[in-house]
Image 1 (cartoon, rainbow, N blue to C red):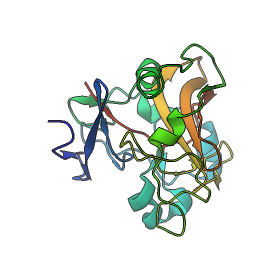
Image 2 (cartoon, rainbow, N blue to C red):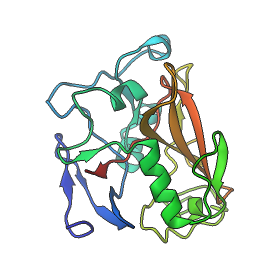
Image 3 (cartoon, rainbow, N blue to C red):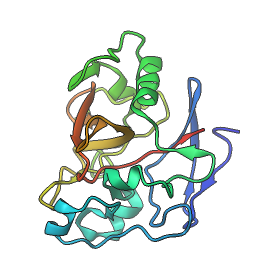
Image 4 (cartoon, rainbow, N blue to C red):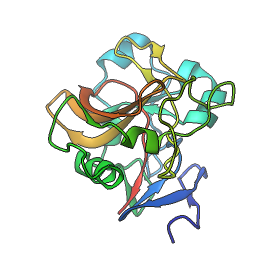
Length: 216
């Protein structure tokens, strides 16, 4: 039952769950290092290899295992859409439409049609953890609007950029959807330390972002 049991990935990492409207979400970012069939997801890519790969890969922010434990791994979108699967059986990376359902539940006035826009002025705060630095994993102050009223507990895991460098831990969180917007881009949701809205945009599939799983 959602919210009362933990889900294990193929590496044995445990994830609490939370019911938000009609959806059941994992309550923390994905940490798995293998596809669900047991194949290893490539990692340790050089900056150049990261920029040009069109295969699934992940990175750990600054290659620091502490960040892996706090924020989970940063996956490129090719890993998200790999047919071998990132999420455990019965779970999947949510589509852009499923992210829209989440945002619309938190804010009935949210705009689910706009692109590269603020979807809702309040849903971001409802998703963000209320923890602030120096609490490990916390957002930079002021963590504007954060209530975590949804129980989603979004953390600011930053990103791995096109150039292979890491940016924005503690002040930005990015989450992939499974939905491709073009051959090179996919839909993303972004949260900010100093803003309460949630942003819907597209980014190159070679970026490294956080991933959440949603129950089938």
